[in-house]
Image 1: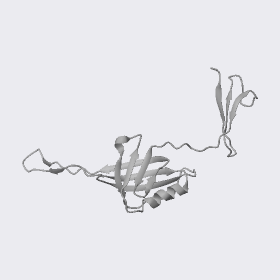
Image 2: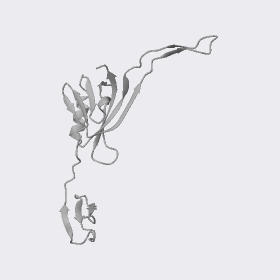
Image 3: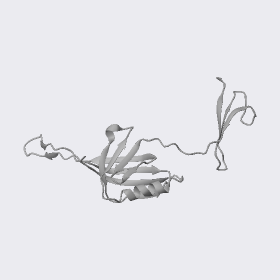
Image 4: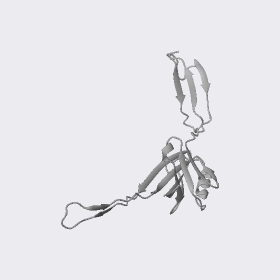
Length: 165
């Protein structure tokens, strides 16, 4: 049926939206709806990011932010009577940065917060970024916060220092 359209009636009163498949000649208020479905909205968790540690696993709904810095440790020496500096090459340091994780419930966010208070090495892995895995320890202060976007989701910010695997 090439004329079929999908009509989604977003509920203003806070109830679940109605999704209707109608033929191309019907209007949303017409009774020619061929199929009606009123789902309960539960966001689908797409397994991607997992953070493991000796006490278990943390599975955020989404990684909202990842910021990392890596110190370059080369040393440049300015030489008298020369336009070219002398350079001592050294390997760069390990990453330091912050993860910003989104959780759908306060209980999951609180569990993540409590896990990061343990004396442990954490392993970050993401199936979408297989080369992006690393091990870290939390540093500074871990922050748990109700999502400022006005939803009922929770965020956990984890500053970290990468450690050698």
